[in-house]
Amino acid sequence: MTETINRQSLEAQATDLLRRQIVGGDLRAGERLLETAIAERCGLSRGTIRSALRRLIEEGLVCHVPYTGYQVIDLSEHDLWELYTLRGALESLGTRLAASRIDGPGTRQLRAAFAQLLAAAESQDHERADRLDRELHKLIIRLSGHERLLQHYLRVENQFRVYIALSNREVDAREICESHRELVESICAGDAERAEKLASANILPPEKILRTRRRDAPPSRGIR
Image 1 (cartoon, rainbow, N blue to C red):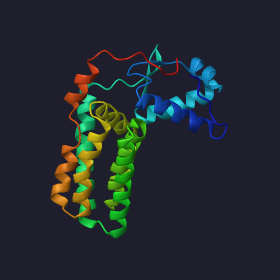
Image 2 (image 1 turned 180 degrees about the horizontal axis):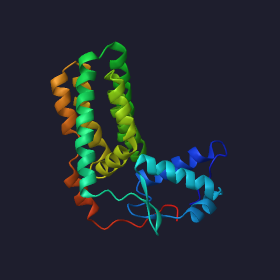
Image 3 (image 1 turned 45 degrees about the horizontal axis):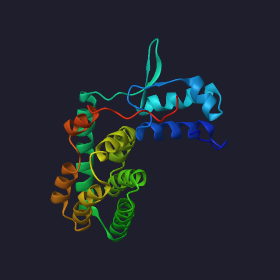
Image 4 (image 1 turned 45 degrees about the vertical axis):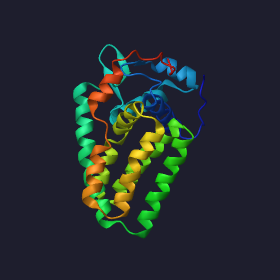
C-alpha cells in the first residue's frame, strides 16, 4: 500500500518512513533499497531519498555496498553480540543510577510510562507496545541523571530499536509487559542492586534472535 508523506520536512519524514519499515521488518535484512523506486512510490525526488538513506547509514540501519547500492543492514551474529553486550552495559548502569536517585516525580513518570505499555500490551497493539517498550528504557536512562550516558545511548538508539523489535517477536506483548513490572517497581523502590540485575535479565540473548532468523522469513511488504 502506498504511504503518503506530508510535504513538511520531507527528508525527515522520508527517513522516518524508511526507519519504521526497517525496524518493523517490512524491509528485511539485506534487502536492496532503490532510490528511483522509493522516490516514485513516495512522490519525492531522488535527492530527498538519497539524503534519507545517508541519514540511515549514520544510524547504522542502512549500508552502501559498492556496485550494489543501498541495502538494509544485515546484522551478523557478531553485530547482535555487540548490541546485546553494549545495551546490557548501558541499561544496567542507567537502571542502577535511576534507582539510586529516583524521586517522587520520577516515580510518577516511570509508572505512567509502564501503564501505557501495559495498556498497549493488553490490546495486543504490537507496534505501539514496541514503541512504548523503547520509550520506557529511554526514560530510565534519562532518570539516571547521567547526560553522557544518555548521549551514548541515543547514538545507538536506532540499532537498539532493531534489536528490541527482533526480541519482541519471540515474546507475547503481555509477557514483555510483565517482564518489566518488577523492573519498574524495583527502581521506584530504590533497590538499585536488584533493578540492575533485572535490567540485564530482561534483554533477550542474541542466540534466541538468531534462532528466529533462521526460520523462513515472510515476504517483504516494504517499498521496492
